[in-house]
Image (cartoon, rainbow, N blue to C red; front, side, top):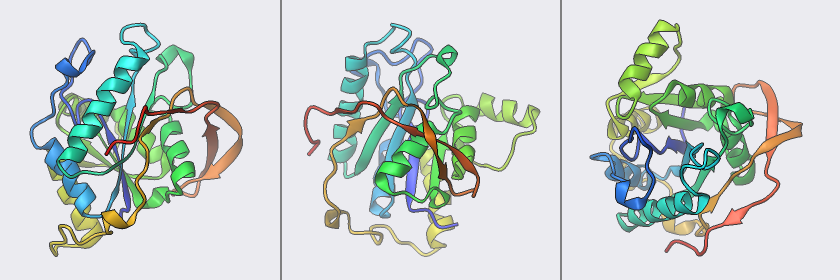
Length: 241
């Protein structure tokens, strides 16, 4: 199935996981090869979104403003290298809050799809956890589990639970290679996708506090699921150049 957009989990896919969480930009470390992989996605003409669970906010471990700062700096660094990030979205809720946006729930994906007019059956999700895969599958996306971050232990959990229907890649660069072959075949198309300059520049925004809405949305799998809406939106302080 051709892929036009990609959702990337953050911790464990783009940057290294920490047992005590990434609490500042000083603690943020890109995984080797991950920035180059994100750049490659953009050069292929794919729309790139970054999504993550950030329960550290509502647990009182890391302030929302700090998470925003980390994401701002991450996007600046990725775009300095040549990537284009359409939007960063995260869920601030704890598991016990039972929201619709914390993965494995598909709320973040459904909200991004609605606002960016995405066809989720032409989207892929790359993550390092079973919850990432379940969110992507619930939304009708192609899913890839990478073995960075928590990926290896999560793969064993998935096998033990009999879960399947997803691809496995060594890291984000390997995942991009899989998606390129699926979308474009074996022919090299680096830089041959959609003209990035032809699309209007988007502000990077952070989507939070998603709540269930009394409406429905048909996703790529053809299954009608509960849609989500956002009661409030916080724009970034400025466009990322």
